[in-house]
Length: 231
Image (cartoon, rainbow, N blue to C red; front, side, top):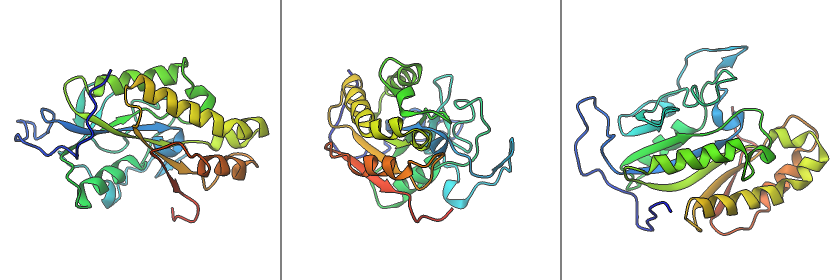
């Protein structure tokens, strides 16, 4: 069972360490999962990332990431470079989210990001018992071993499920089952899940997947619609 708190965000109570990182402070932790949309392809052309980091994705000593080696370090783009290793990673939504959490008048102190996304994956590849599911749970568990609280899972995935009608039709049930299983295995039955409704996809069943994402009614599941958003 992971430590669960229903109180507000943790405020820093100790100074940064000698390297300028807040690794010794309690963290408000967010799990980043899904496929390439979450792993980040911004600024990637072919097999190279252009290195451009937008202002909203700037690093901050109080925003950390859990590396593939399960150590905390200052977060910077590309967040998933050592996680989604078979693809070239660029800018994703994780850093912009973390900076917004800290900037929008919240009581967030140190924000810890746990990258878990892998490009090109169907939701079935994330079901309980799969390697991706096991890695997510392992990394989430390790992220709170020395303190901190998992505040939410950020989920951005579904493009790979738009190719076959069978996958698209099964999406809602698979997503709901994934949420229930993760909440159970992370010991938090009300863990917030923030998912993104797709604006595009690899196949012709985009609207079927979108309806599934927008139609989930499990408690404490929020959906952000990407349709109509700019690049």
